[in-house]
Length: 89
Length: 148
Image (cartoon, rainbow over all chains, first blue to last red; front, side, top):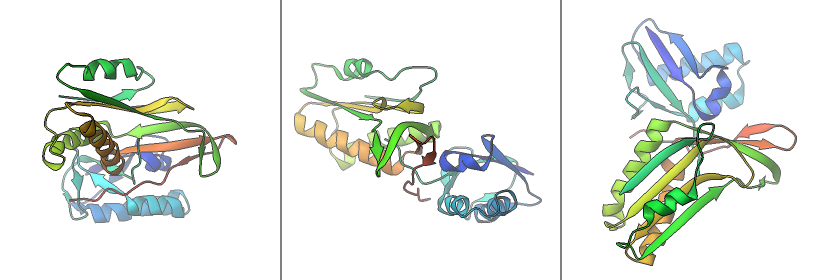
C-alpha cells in the first residue's frame, strides 16, 4: 500500500514536492512510519540532525484532519499529514 | 457569531475594514481589533519578510473550537469574533493575522482577544519561515502539538 505523507512547515524541506510517498508492505503504526521517515533522511540527507529532530517532535494527522497517536495503525492507502511544532500569529 | 478564514495572499488581501464591518453592531458596547504584523528584527537578526504555511482545514477547525469553548471557559456568550490568518509571503509591516472581537462590555473584549491569540499560538497548525537580509531563511522553532 501507499502512504502519502503531506508536508507542512519545516518538514517541507524534506522534498521539492508537497509530499513524500512510502510503499509499505503491511499495516504500519505512526511510530513505525516515523522510523521510515528517519531512514529516508539518513539515505537522502546524510542523517541531517535538524531534519531528524523535526520528525521526532512532530505530530501526525489523519486524512480526516484529526491529530493521531503513535499507536494509530495505517491499514490502507491513505494520506497522513506531518505537523511539525507550530507557531503562527 | 464567528468568521474564520485563511487568506492565501497570492489570491486575496487581508483587510481590517472587513473585520470592522463584521463586529459592528449596536448589540455590542465594545469592540477590539488585534493585528499581528511582520517585525523587522527577531533574536538580533534583521528580518526582511516571513512566509506563513498552514494546514488550512485544521486551522479553521482550531479557530472554531477556540470560539466554542469560550462560552464555558470564559463565560462570554454574547460575542462576535472575526479571525483571519494569512498564508504565503509577507513583507515588513504587513498583516499576518486579524482578530476582531465585539462584546457587550469592554472587559470581555480584552479577555477574549487575548485568549484567542494565545490559544492560536498553542493549537493552530501555522508555521513561519523567516527571511533575513543575508538572503538566508529559517523555519522558526515552535511548540509541538500533542495527540489526545
